[in-house]
Length: 89
Length: 95
Image (cartoon, rainbow over all chains, first blue to last red; front, top):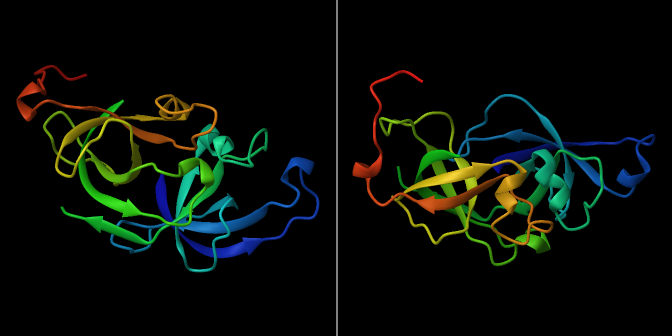
C-alpha cells in the first residue's frame, strides 16, 4: 500500500455499470514525511475520504478485495484514512 | 518477496471494514547489502513484526493470502521475520 493525498475528484457519467455509485478521487502518492512526489492515480473511495486527507491506497488486483469492490473493474482503491504516520529512520 | 526493514507505524481509524484489526507498518525495502532501495511502503503485518526488525514482504494479490484471502485488500504484507542480519548471505556473484 502507498500513502497518498487527495487532490481532486473525477466525474464520469458513462462508465462501467459496476462503477455506478462509486466515488472517484484523484490522489498523489506522498512520502512518509508528507512531502509530495510526482504523478497521479485515480482511485475508488471505499471509506468516505475528503480533500487533502492522507489516505492508504491499495493498487493492483488487491483493490478488488476491499469490501464493496467485489467484481468491480478497479486497480486502485482508497481503503483507509491515515491518522498518524510514525517513522523512526 | 523482498527484504525490508520495519521503520515505522501507521494509524488509521477510518478504514475499510475488511482491514479492521490489522496492524499497519512502514517498511523500507533493502538490498542484499542491507542498503535502502526505493521508497517506503505501508504493509499489513501477518507475523507480529516490530520496528527495527528485518523482515520479508510479499507484493501483489498474494499479499492477501495470509488472511481471509478474498476479503483482505492488501498489496503489501509482511510474511516473515529474518532471524538476524547474519542470516542474510551475500553472494559475490551478480544476479
